[in-house]
Length: 107
Image 1 (tube, rainbow, N blue to C red):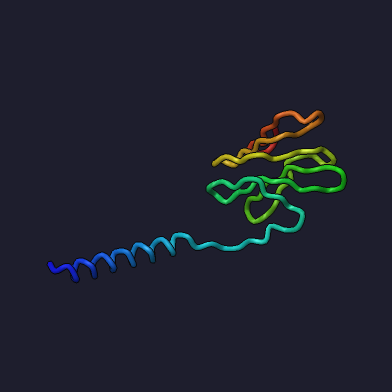
Image 2 (image 1 turned 45 degrees about the vertical axis):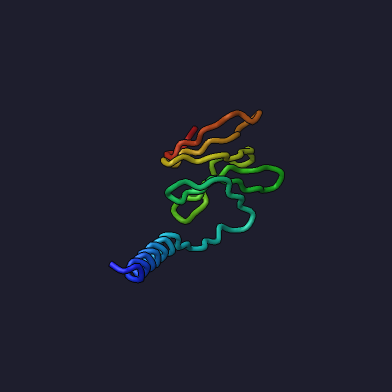
C-alpha cells in the first residue's frame, strides 16, 4: 500500500473518530429556574442543590424535570453530594448535623 493510501486511510479514520466523539458530546440546555443553586449532578442527571427562601436555605434535588424539597419548611439544609442511586448527603436540621436524604424519602 502506498504512503498516500495510508495517509487517506488515517485521515478517514480520524474523521470517523472525530464525528463519533462530536455526536457523543451533544448536550441539551435545561432551565433549572431562578434561585436554584446546583451543587452536584449524578450519572442519571439528578441534581443536588440549594434553594434560598427568606432567611433559610433548603436542600433540594432535581429529578423527573422537577425540584423536590428535602428539608421541612423553615428548616435549613444544605445538599452537598448525590450518589448514583439518588441518595443526597448534606447538612440539615437543628444545629446543622450531617444528614442523608435517601432517594425514597425520609432521613
